[in-house]
Length: 113
Length: 111
Image 1 (tube, rainbow over the protein chains, first blue to last red):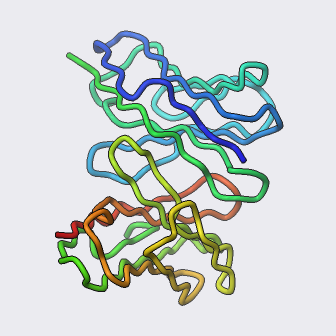
Image 2 (image 1 turned 180 degrees about the horizontal axis):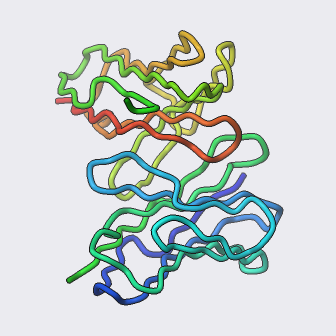
């Protein structure tokens, strides 16, 4: 079964600086990969997804992620963050085959003015 | 109106009480899920259902039960609530693996 590791529980960053949130998954077989975002006091919403094709995936709000099969990683990046990007970010992968998503423990991004 | 609606949004109850959290969706999806969120633990799957006649346990199903009343409705019950079930509960739907659509959550406090 798949598992997901988010290497940083909290990431503080100054406004307009770049940010990378790290995610590693447990298996090197073909996978679907997802990033979700949770703004304060809200539910989760899909930020971006990798299903197949180009390893560089673009999502909403200027975020992008790169699928690296050899390193079993799917790190999330944004070149210049805004205060409104303050949120918790979750990496997720199906547990195996036709199964529900398994989520990482989340990374709390705090953007400092 | 929201695509995935959870009720109640907030509930405070006492140990031993029976609690039901309800979820309804207008997405027309067959698949529905209940997750629990605890600080520092991410989301953990409680139960899921791929259609009205299909119910499956997730990672942390002990102490919980579910009912899929219709394609659009999936409720979560705590038969006898205990304090460590204090958490934020999310219902979600999908029409295939991944791409979950979440409700806004039900915050449950068990005293």
